[in-house]
Image (cartoon, rainbow, N blue to C red; front, side, top):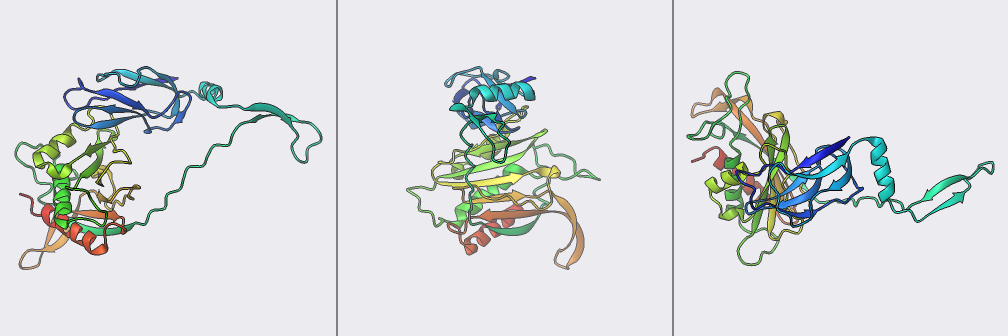
Amino acid sequence: MRIDVVMPRIGESTVDSILSRWTRRIGERVGKGEVILEISSRQVDIGVPAPAEGVLVEMLMPEGSRVESGAVLARLETESVEASRVLAESSPVSSIRRTEAPGSTGKSDDVLDRPSPASPPTLSLPQAVLVHEADASVLTAPREGQPRTPSNGDSPAQIDLAHVVWAFLKAVQESGETRRPSRGSRDVTVIVTSVRGSGLVTAIIRNALRLNLAALATSLAEAGGESCATMYSSPDSPGETYEISALGASGPFLLVQPIQNGHMAHLAVGAVRKSVVVAGPHDTLDTRPMVYLTLAYDPRVIDLAKAARLMSRVVFRLERLP
């Protein structure tokens, strides 16, 4: 069965969306969620993922084409027989030779002499992790003009993701330079992954230190749309790159995400849970929404003291939002 790969909706308009690059070729097998092509627009760069596991059999638009929301960009073959045929036709076969297996009785078999696939490289990055707990009472409170998911009864509270990103960037700015030298002003990119509908949407925000809270909220709102799209940054992005992951109520209470090669740190936000805490000037027991924050960082560029200050500033701002 063939499945269409459809252009997702990006914000309110896709007039300036360009198919910038195909990341897969005809005959290649792709897994569900793997990016097969890149789309560029004025606001964001996105990677369109495969909606299912299969073999790429049709590429319907060339690089450089203008694309609109809902346009069919490619097709995948998911049937095992057809997929095997496409793979066989696209695989390089140097020769077909007759071989005799060791220990056989003389009967030989036809063996395809194909190059062995290269093993994927294994990355071993030094990583350290800090875990902090924050009071999410202010973070989950409804704000004027911003609808919230009800948190009464058994409904889990939802965090304000834009405020999390804002607080983290403020903490990064206040923490000063890292051990990685920068040229001129700091160029900070933040990659924010969150749940949207039934899938994950990851927004890339460049020059993030220059944006205020409203601009960050707009960037997050325009990431993806009704369809699931994975947004990402190029591994050769200049400056400092940080990641933030928040899986919402569907995620675990304690979430730890590893850093990627070339990135500085990864802040993971767990699901909000109600917990009994000692609070107030008289040390009284109270039930409040609490959230775990974990920071995975590269100790080669961020030392322990700086990482601890960074997390303390994040917690401080989240518990005292303006």
